[in-house]
Length: 462
Image (tube, rainbow, N blue to C red):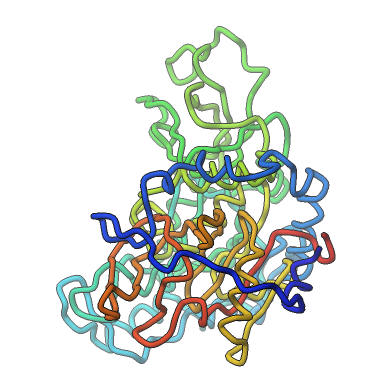
């Protein structure tokens, strides 16, 4: 049954425990068993059933590229970029901020300094027409609003959320290099999921076919752990202990001679993979590196099953929250994106885009929808369904004693204590929480602020 038909169903009233457990850690409703993916997998009738097969995932991704404007098809980028096209990417990020922002020391960032960031973006220097240039990201790197490392914040003392932090890109990500900053240290790049500024030192420029073909061939390995790292080596620093995040796919050099060293190390205890390196002149080289056989990797994307969604999500449990992928971690939308990416599924980068994507099976809510109507839909949710409220996303992991449970990367939760007053638990991590007891603010429940639920299916699938 399609999820979009569920709102029309008249479901019976659902009784759930009015008193959820309150452990010493003060996260309402969460006990030790809730932090184990095996607990939730055991509740499933068909945990290993493929929700989409390989062809279905490919069809889903094609639909995402075709229907969702937030996803960029780099194969369709023209050979020459016009000024209008580049400015369409640049201008939304490059206007000087008008609100008050603060630096790490709590001082107000001056208007002159804010203007200097926009000046370095050099929007007026975009040429009328230029050949499209291509590159591969060689190291996990931040994507920034402006070409600057300066961190800025909305209020004094709150230095977790850098307002110039947009996202991050990972080794092997293909990009179109659309523009260069005035100081020459930054590229404005268009990646498959985001367009923003990246430090030039993290991008190696190469031929279009080489860049776009990297990672598509076989054999390959997909990182299925939260992260994996290449082995240390003193000979090629760019490939030494290089971090690869969940869902990153890299080519394997199966024809590498079995007894030939890689950067001074015998390869028989490792996989020989091919990774991009930026040479001194900025040019791309693809070189061998060793990934230990103990790494959490797979020879292909994992099957899209409820069991895998749970196992993959829980691999991030307890990781620090990182706005825009700062702190070398990830945020709420990055978390769900990387869980699904390990199964080959493409999602838009931000919650605002994910929640409205026309390529997914969506149920939307508005302010007129009653609390009871929303609860009726929650009772039908399946593992892996994505629940959106303004600025946040949670992934459903199951139901327990009538309550919906989710895993999400969150700054914290609010709920009403025994005295009816709001209680705030500052989490700053990937966490498991119940959904129904949560408060969006001191007056509204989280349930009443749900804007959408997305299920990963091609349109019209059962």
